[in-house]
Length: 296
Image (cartoon, rainbow, N blue to C red; front, top):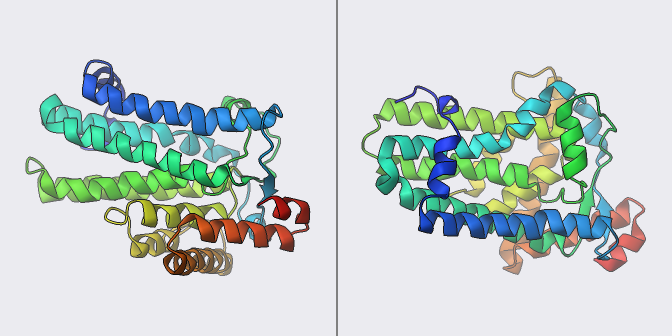
């Protein structure tokens, strides 16, 4: 058994996906949703084939987080972040023992993309990301990502899913000692926080995008990711960074407020999309985007 999840390879997961019919079926459903509701949705809008409104969701607080191109590797490590834990399960539990968990995880991934697209189809969202092309990572995201799907952030939704999913299933797995389980969860949580911070450091998202993503997870998978998890996740952002304490407090207080607003309205309304839609409309009105607001 390897000591850290990051030491596992992505290839055993890929091999499992393409050599087991049931696993492939769940993976295919997920990847079909990604293509349809992430890539096609954006590029159709970019080419003028759809007329979904696009709102700018920048916030003045974003300026308190410096643009840091060095964080691009952490941002792009997002895919390895969810694949390598699957490899860990496959290698340690075997194909038979890991199969139900792999399928369940792909089903959760698909649900996240499918659900987020319900918001994107009402109103797409973007930010003023820097035109920075000085390394391959930035050229890659600028080429493949038109940057129209910011609220809710799928990066943040999926990293919160990874940590909370393994927190739920690891107690069921008896071959791991408690120390190993805690070590794996600690690794996943710390890496999730780093990736969440990275989406802000590389300016792929605004502070508005983070609470929306966490809120969505509390409604989609309440038995996996709780309201308390969302609050704790926000609390642990930017600890031990160069961002001044007073700026950290201002950033977190704002995200707490938005997160709790979504929760309260969502519980009252009974429809998790309604508070995000309402907030988007209000945000557009308050940021001189009245024409966009009329279309929401």
